[in-house]
Length: 457
Ligand code: BES
Ligand code: MN
Ligand code: MN
Image (cartoon, rainbow, N blue to C red; front, top):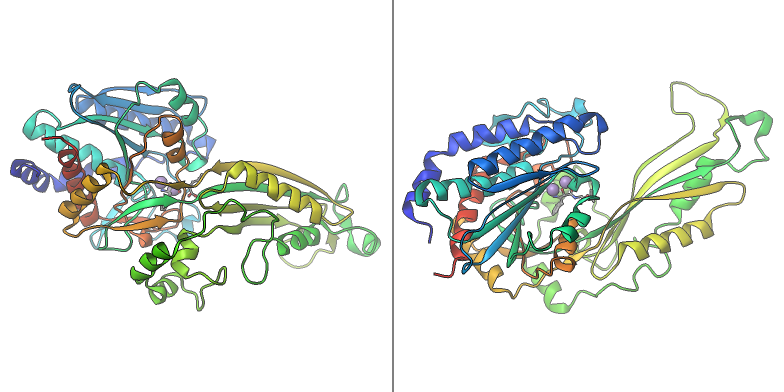
């Protein structure tokens, strides 16, 4: 039970919580742009300052990339310890012209806060800080020990967090981890996530002649790199939506009947999805429902493609090169390194003669499946019911959080609580990203409830 004084405190502070969130969102901490390096650092310092104000022993740990912020308030050796993870970096805001208001000048409209990072992940992570603040303001101590780990490289697949976990195993020791970096099943239906997809992200470059050629003078004697690339890309999927890479499906744990029944019971709104996306038809692998396809089955997508002439008018050339970025979402128990290898082998085998192919591996994350039968999961379910006024459903999510597997493997933490406060239509990574303020406040309440639910007495 959350003491009434804390509930009152949280209710009375809503406006200030939102004002502080707005100042967090004003920092353009885009981790992938090197020109934003000092902004990313400013966001880290902003979080560090919050932790210090909450009486955490906290430090900024520089890496070769962006800093990691870690802090703890652990003064009760007989109580459990919760590790909270979040990320203060954000995705690039482009295309800017699609935003109705500037991405780093957050505003409140119709009960939503709009701005890059509103839901992914600044707004969701911030609920932990404000819940802790409210508890400390009233009770002067927390019901359990708390550690907080916040990074600035999640959106670039956490390259420096893995070594940090290995070198700080004792500092990071905890009974459970809580992460709010996903979403509810849909607005108003809170959820606990028990699976995330993994990711293999590669870049392909096809090179033909040494320079762009006159297509009249040389047409007929060279392989066109753009067409060679198109041929390769056209062979990645079968017409039924299955991925054509040999061995791709070998390690997948098939969905069991109980789980498919459970997913069907969620009554996923396909029509709602179509209208949100503005498409007439959904697509994907035959034999699976849209909800299964977007969360529990693997996918392969071309993320971008370039090559040749695309300016105004016509230019008669055979381009010298072409390229594409391709990513695959993976499901348990696929392994991104193995999939990268299979992709490379297959693509090399189908590359037309006359061009050379280079493949670069950009990102990777392994998929996760976490246990639903942990006492901590039950505690989280009760906490969500208190915060949202409704018991959570259990879902798989299609996105990836690279660090989750490492928390299991490196730190040996089995209880991983993936508690999304956002909504699938928040527009994470899209223009006009937003977060419903009521969900922000429900998230804060849920966090406070969680800390009490995890406390033994
Ligand atoms: N918060 C997302 C992951 C997510 C999205 C989880 C939706 C659950 C539901 C995270 O910030 C993210 O975008 N991850 C990247 C990982 C990549 C850059 C390695 C992703 O999924 O594309
Ligand atoms: Mn995120
Ligand atoms: Mn993200």
